[in-house]
Length: 441
Image 1: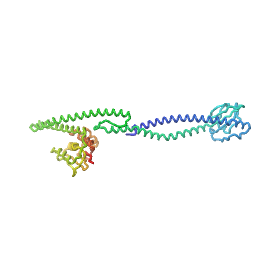
Image 2: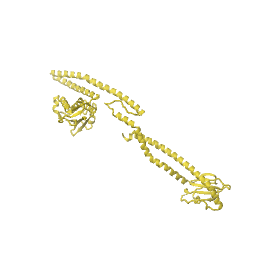
Image 3: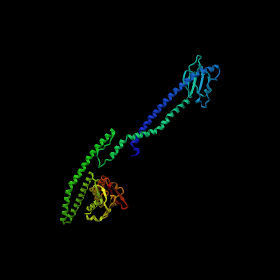
Image 4: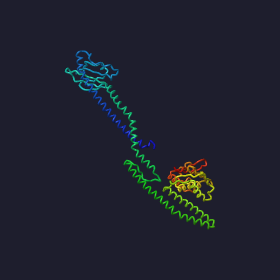
């Protein structure tokens, strides 16, 4: 499954994006609250400092000295200057810090409370009995720096956790979708030869509903296929005897007719009846293959192949076209003898039917039980072998076959636990069908 269309990846990404959006909203809300709380704390500290230093500033001013005041270093940046002032109601400054000239001071007469300029946050105390005010200023740059450092201390570790969160979400999604993978595997095991109900333990309710609908569909499909197979089987059985009788009557009529014109027409009818008889035989074999035939007892494939060749070579015209290569001793395999004979017979007849003219067909049985049948196939292309095992698929539309032989052989091979491989080899080219069957032990 491609990553671009992966449901697991899509869910992981969407959930992670959702968590990321929540994280951004939470970070923004946290930043707002942090800024507000820091401002409140700084304002409170500024107020307490101003009230604490008010009597000291008044005392030092009355004594005419500032020796007792705290030393405030001269900053290079006005935005970092901590300032204080002692004023009367008219705004006359009696005493100020050396950094006051670097700061932007509040306009107008002093009044109790908080005020802000572009560089500082100020708090002015209540006036004393003589109407003098003390104003203390806290640099806004210091507050902003403290806010940024606090925010980064929270955001940076959380940013580092986002990839870990994505991995965790991916694992959770993978674990949650595991029943879907189990269901997919069970469905993949179903096919033309297997339409039994899908049963997977521990499926969620949603998948149980899908499974129930799927099982109902397969049941209806199985019923339809069974009816189709039964019809084909019954039709083949019913046609076999009438076709055989008609063929016998035509053959008898051919021996009794001396008229050349009538003889030609009789021979044409005989050829058609022979083709119909072959089709009936293939349909019966197809019914047996669809019903399940393959695995069975251990048999000697050399002996079975001998019986198949005897049956094929009853036609005198085919005797010189088959070249066989057999092992010296017996070759044992786990397969139903009828099934193996059907496969071997179909492969050999397929080679004889499609090899041009009197071209030879090679039949090789290896010691490992692999049966190879090869014949010249000048009309096939490299793309054809991949489709020839389909039902009613013929490589040569003008040929005499029905497109069933290789399909029957492939079906039986799969049921017997083996396989059928078809390929084109060489420049001629040579069509080869290799049937591999399971060995005992």
